[in-house]
Image 1 (spheres, one colour):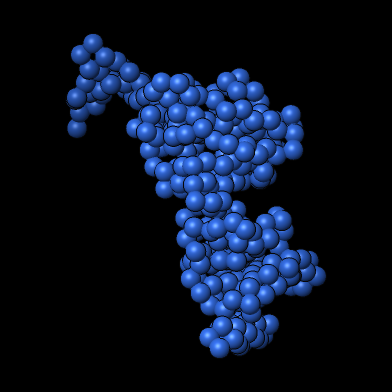
Image 2 (cartoon, helix red, strand yellow; image 1 turned 120 degrees about the vertical axis):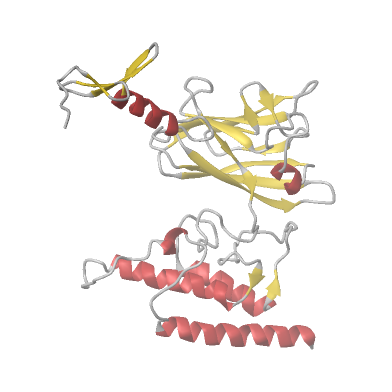
Length: 321
């Protein structure tokens, strides 16, 4: 067996020393570990161009309803999913480009925020810039962003007519003032299920809390209107909230009430966490999931199914009479 001394070339142009392995190539000599680190750093960037470890991060969805034959009303819940504040939200915009097909109207802003319409002119669309006096704290949701437009939800879901390579909903957030930091780019699209709360499915009245009121709203709707397919395009004033489609199937049934009741049961178990022994983790899906499951139906849940079914059947009979 051949032996090699430290610093002596090995087959394939490899040289060993005490600390690391070197690779010899024509006119190239590099250490493997630093290059691997560079590769890891490159792969750590996601498609939007921001590092995955970046502290600034956001998500948002657009809720919508029809105002009249030509106008749609939109509202946005902005979720700060990062670890810094958000002081600027610029919808339908990246630096130098605005994507809305037409100029928005009736701009709505959260308390402490101001809004400006940007863009316009030849070969450019429009956008809305919201600036905060009181930035959004980390891990919180800020509602109250809104506007009217003649552009339909389908148009807002598609590509910008003035910038065909960009989606209309391509947007930016900044920690404070616009362009004062690298910002974060993300896409804000109209929701797929307009009667479902995209932030928390069981928060029927959209008050950022889960309470018996959420279940009562669904039960009352079933009692008044029965089983039915929900309108794909809500029409004001009969538009959410309440967000009665808790399982996001675009159909009103007792399952929508049952999801809230199960979530309330799980919440009650969580609140008594330190008072009762337990062996399994509580169900975090109750907080944010579209559909909920429990090991076995509780007595309250089974009773609720029966009551809701009878109520809905009674409503259907009254309508057909």
